[in-house]
Image 1: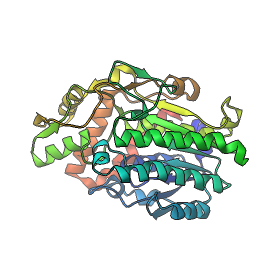
Image 2: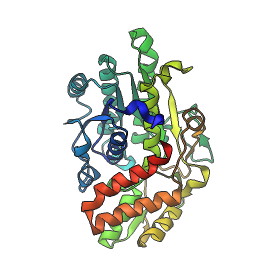
Image 3: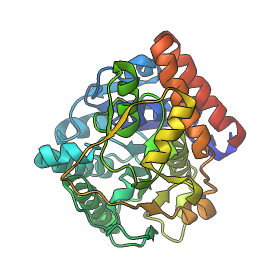
Image 4: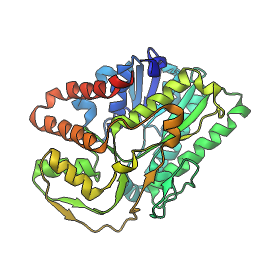
Length: 359
């Protein structure tokens, strides 16, 4: 447990705890003995992992409010007095950002500002880990692998909102000395996540599961698009390393004590196309009927990020290769179909199996 010892007994505020990644984060934090305080809207999907895996039982407290409500965010931070904040709450999808760009920017930019300001005003907070995305990079679709120093930008409202959030974070980070506020702000940029419990619309694995259940065709926009797929627990692992780094005091000995950006992406061999991912799902579950659909929205054909810094400085590595990630994902959805009452035990077991070799 040495790698995560500072989490034991620590009060951690998790925004977006009712979502897919937030639910897995709660399982991992509870595994290491953290006291979890969640703030989010009610689960965004029906069904939801939050309800199916009984995540509420893992929490010390929760508040179901909109992250864009600055007064509610400030009040909850003041009430719970966390040592660190893990900021996951977001509008996390590209296609809905075209439908409601205003709401996307409100949530992803001003929601982030609200969390940062609440952290600044809550003296117990030693640091914030804010989750953005690998899509913050200005990607022209060419065969580039992005490091943390690459230019950020956005071709769609979602990507642009996350890039704007990164700029807001940088503004807060660089202003901390002027405020005489001794805390750090890290950002984590992760690749495409797969794993059990995701029910988001217009996302590949949930759409695959729905196609299997309904026996209807799965519509694929770009089967040749290459993405950095990784299991959700690989990213959660990185987030917890950053939280532990803050709480253990390591950040104070860093050459960049105010925090910085971190890429968390898979090995190059695990960056595969949509079509290849669908083949692997078929091998581990059932074969879905796949049809290609035309889309007018912009999507880069190629996206890879370089996680070298996280590997060298945090000791992080993606401990689940793509084949195992697909196997674990398919297992979760199969149990959902057969016996959903066992999903909390399965989620616990998958979390335990991931972190056991690392502690």
